[in-house]
Amino acid sequence: MTHSVILGTGSYVPEKVLTNQDLEKIVDTTDEWIFERTGIRERRVAPPKAAASDISIPASKNALEAAGMYPKDIDLIVVTTLTPDSLCPSTACWLQAEIGAERAAAFDLNAACSGFVYGLQMGDAYIRSGLMKNILVVSVDLMTRTVDWSDRGTCVLWGDGAGAVVMGPAENGEKGLIDSYIYSDGHDADKIVIMGGGTKLPPMTPEETESNERTLKMKGQETFKTAVRHFTDVCKEVLEKNDMTVDDIDVFIPHQANIRIIDAVAKRLELDRDKVVITIDKYGNMSSATIPVALDEWVKEGKIRHGDNVLMAAFGGGLTWGAALVEW
Ligand code: UT7
Image (cartoon, rainbow, N blue to C red; front, side, top):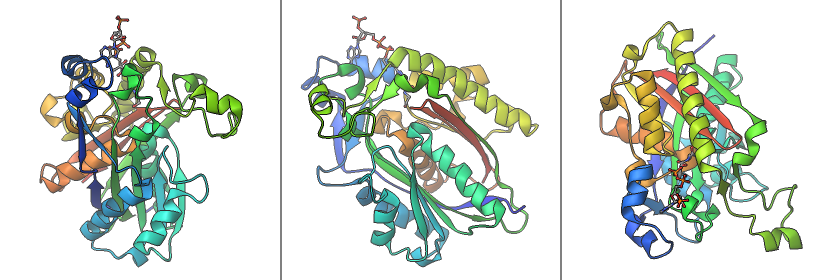
């Protein structure tokens, strides 16, 4: 079967910066607490009228340009998001029209913060099966739209951003996406929730309106412990299944939820800190966008070179988690 490769990367973060000092004026918090407990200094906030598809446009165009492709070359657009433009149509369809990817099929995928790893595996499966050739995977989240600005335990964590990759079939024996694993455990669904607006708590009902259930709620400590365990296990799994050790990894891009989670996982894997990509200080947690934004930045800065083994791992609401291993 043909392997899939990442042909180009792109990303976009909104210009507006919200610092920890800005948050000190909104909730009872301090820059020291936020930085020490999470690693975050600042995050980006999209303009009030921008939708997820709007900030996906520059990220997608970037990725297409890097891949040397035109929008009409794309067969499939997968947008991973938990903050879609609308329930119908999908964000992917809005984006398709905006970028003029006329031939593409388009749909959304929601695996919360794990979305990018899920999207990569989906793109890989379509390419390996021969059903699709060129696939645009866009991970976008406007997490500041979901935030309860009176809850200091969650509102300091999140930011907005979009990252994209163009995937295609490998040529000349390249390995590309070596392997990937994705998992879910719906028994832990209540750990991270945005309940309002769906069919469990439909919009415009008195219950939904009064309960402020449109905002994100998270059981932080419980999520933290589970995240460290699953992150570590799935990284070990992908290495073991491919007869590789941590020494074979050149770059590790973890989902950016908390610097202490990243450090704990790196320590358990005995992974050199220099190989770990950190963007949480400047962007916070952009949910599914964190990995592709970090990937694009390292690629554009020349920190990921041809032949490097790049390990990506994510964890989030669902609960969901997964890892993907790519030879660049
Ligand atoms: O991306 C999806 C996956 N997400 C995650 O994996 C997130 C995992 N969880 C976490 O990152 C951490 O649990 C948090 C950053 C959310 C919270 O950090 P924590 O160290 O677990 O803090 P905590 O919730 O145990 O709270 C400790 C104390 C509490 O005060 P008391 O009860 O000890 O007096 C909180 O009220 O810190 C207080 N606190 C704050 N203080 C200042 C909580 N948030 C803040 C804040 N500023 N922003």
